[in-house]
Amino acid sequence: MSFAATILTLHPEMFPGPLAHSLAGRALADGLWSCDAIQIRDFATDRHRTVDDKPAGGGVGMVMRVDVLAAAVDYARALEPDAPLLAMTPRGAPLTQSRVRALAVGAGLTILCGRFEGFDERIFEGRGVEPVSVGDYILSGGEIGALALLDACIRLLPGVMGAASSGDEESFEAGLLEYPQFTRPVEWEGRAIPEVLRSGDHARIAAWRQRQAEVDTRSRRPDLWERHGGAPDQPPSGAQREE
Image (tube, rainbow, N blue to C red; front, side, top):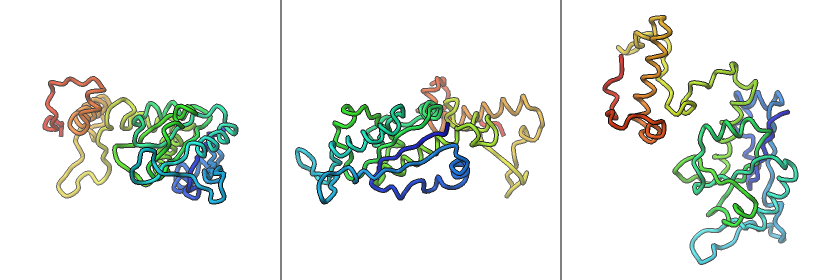
């Protein structure tokens, strides 16, 4: 069974977009996942196909109408009754690798993409929509976030990456940033690949990589380090990095 992605959007032409290329594109061509972009405007009931209105209580911008959103969601739910339903919004919980992994093992997901000032809040409780965020910044709409979410899921599907273990040591998989990577040439502008990586000693290499992952996470992402359970009394400096 392929992974079915359904996207509710005002801009269906944005899908599959970049996901039609590289790993995701090959997986799409091979039938490992499918992409169905649905136009939210098709569920408007007036002759102007209106999907938004002024904010209740006043304010700038426009808000996506709950009745139109609900009709679109109900249609998508009928197509994929068991698919989790997520909405891309900066007011949502931050998307994590563990959540991505949980989504990727299912049969697919439905993503609701917002525009303007966002969604009428009643859609979340009224239709059991899970709000998620891809970062603490504002985009023009939810489509770019949806593409990021889909890419994160698709690369985990069986048969997409060359080796099943390809992503096991990447950033966030174990709660840490990934260790630094190097390749040829051995020397470049006076900078050499660390000797330990050229030693052939797999135990030393594994220990070095674990240590660098911890050092970099502590210095670059103290929030991740704290959640990982790192010792708070260690200095947030990369000065101890082994060369």
